[in-house]
Length: 159
Image 1: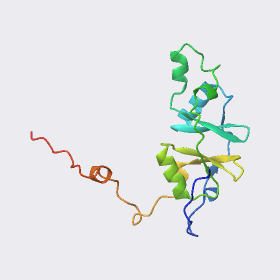
Image 2: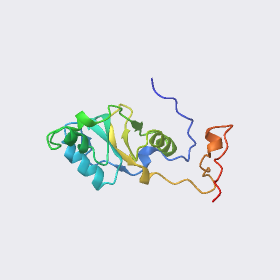
Image 3: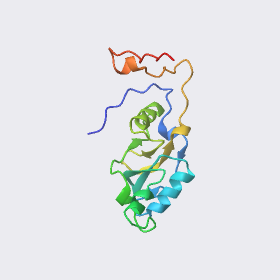
């Protein structure tokens, strides 16, 4: 079932209008060592994994090959599909930049796969390519009281 979308304001930027990296994605058949090298090179916490034209999961880093090594496997011979999260997180090209930001925050991603209306992979959108909110529009970070009503901030100890 598709997720409900907010009604867009005409001036809101769509993900298809942003800087989408269409370079070769990480494939499920790639060696884990290759994915780890790419995560570190791009200074990324995660990358979408694509098989064919479909997003099939997420590989998280910065050192995904450590698990394979820990169990005595050679990361050059273990595929990404073995170590990836099977949760395929993507955003459609017609969704807004704000929706992309919310989804990336919710799943703690710094890159997200962009797909067309048929679910085909188009490219990767990075957090750094999202437009920044104006200072007037920026809402302050939530406080402990906002998150847990009825609680107080911890008291400072006297020295």
